[in-house]
Figure 1 (cartoon, rainbow, N blue to C red):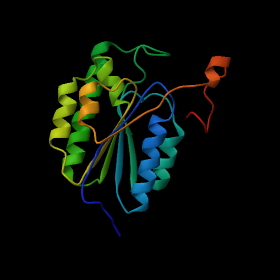
Figure 2: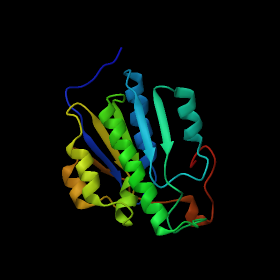
Figure 3: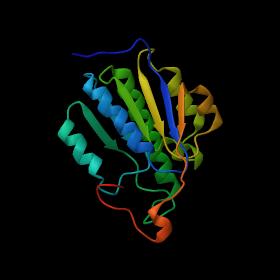
Figure 4: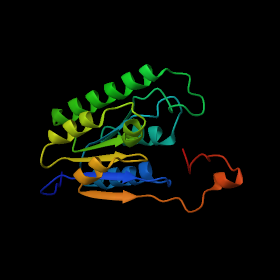
Length: 180
């Protein structure tokens, strides 16, 4: 049985620390426990295999993750042009808006969208337009570093993850099951 609150929220997880996507997935688990259907659209990820993709398959049809980016932008193994990254980000936003408006989902997570905005791949105005048409009882979570002030002002809840200590500082690379 679906249990919904009286209003939806705009929620932002931002900052330089780890845990933004993880916090959004935690919220997805809570929502699924209430009978909601959750969609996560990933903006910057897309070429690596993350364990959360396997988790989503196990929780289908209640939880769906759609990686739509062409990979990380200007780091690691990026070999795509700026135009390819921009096209992927805009396509992901259009897809997310269509899914939100479909009424098929109860919670939408826009993973790494703040990075897409801050790097200039996605115009902030287009993201604000999506929030303008958000149904009143629908919640949207936006993750990623460097959330712009306009988005923070629009949000109902903002949490900043701050890095204090990270294994990478000791040369320890990302670990399966912990980082991806």
